[in-house]
Image (cartoon, rainbow, N blue to C red; front, side, top):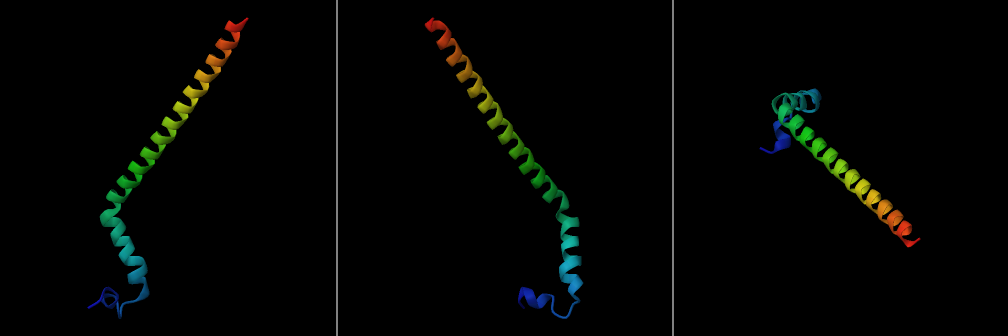
Length: 72
């Protein structure tokens, strides 16, 4: 019996409504924790990139201004 044959003879709402709802109830915590982990990881990556970019900007700003001041 194929996977498609498993749902033969059942109403459309069983395949498209009931089964996904049952999957969300059973695996909802796992799905939420995975999504939360990915969101936290992306936030940390963006925060890291912003901090490194800010550091590079500040270092270049202060090194260029200090080198121009030491010339005169």
